[in-house]
Length: 385
Image 1 (tube, rainbow, N blue to C red):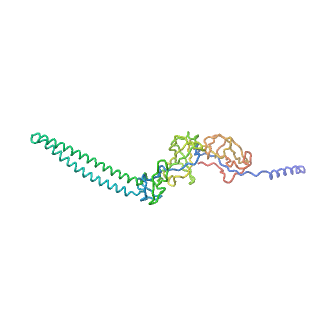
Image 2 (tube, rainbow, N blue to C red):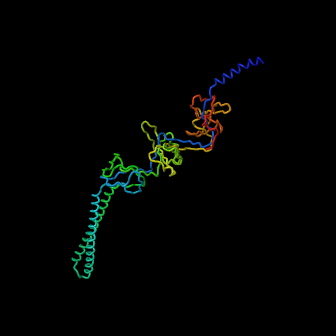
């Protein structure tokens, strides 16, 4: 018994030394291997932009002094509504003059044509009398020539009337150039000039601030640059998700509507292809504003109810660290991945449903064989999406 006691003392001391000198378990964040949706996606290389389907930076066709501003910023307008007008009293006076001249020409044309009708009837009457030898041939000839001359005068007067009417249209067009109308229904984003200020039309090739910035805000889409390497896999009609910094939720009721037929080659930037993504649900665009920055994920393919794990858990060489609850150790496993995106990676082999993998792989001391303990925010069991 005394010998057994002597032997137990060193063993007890060794056990105590191991217990007090052993490393503390490393806290790790775990996620369960589960079944759910996995999508293969491509995303934009730089921030995209929310744009309106139609946006016009309007300016009057003629320069002059602003006589009336019919709208303010934020007003909703209908198509054809007057937005602004330039002083045009001189043009209105010319229009009134043109109308009066047209009325005068109309009266002269009526007079000339009625006279032509009288002379024509007189010539016809004398021609019948000549057949009965009651009048001379010379008189008939003179009457016929006079009738033709009067008819020519009628034609000239009617032509002059058409010229006068054309002058009215010219005057009306000149006035219309001083009136700025909405080319489509939308909302006024900006009004640059003030009442009484002078505005000038923008010269060709020289951009100037618009007088009125009009946006069709009820139709929005996102344009984003996609790397040239990813562009060949994209097709019109593919589903997509849009993320905006201004909103916590993602908008996944969108789809690709256009792929640019050329590659953008800009200095100090990767070569990209512009892709447009349209919102298919009008309700999604109610709170959006043109100009928001946006990120786009285009879904190339997807699998439902497939085995998946968080992509952040996958290490180099397609390895993951599996937590063993029995002994608290981390075990390295090599998986066979399938579809993948930045959220989830499909697992074809290597782990089973319900096993837990480490996602805090960058934490100090996290490696195969390490003793670990789950953090409070770990997911103990797999959940369906």
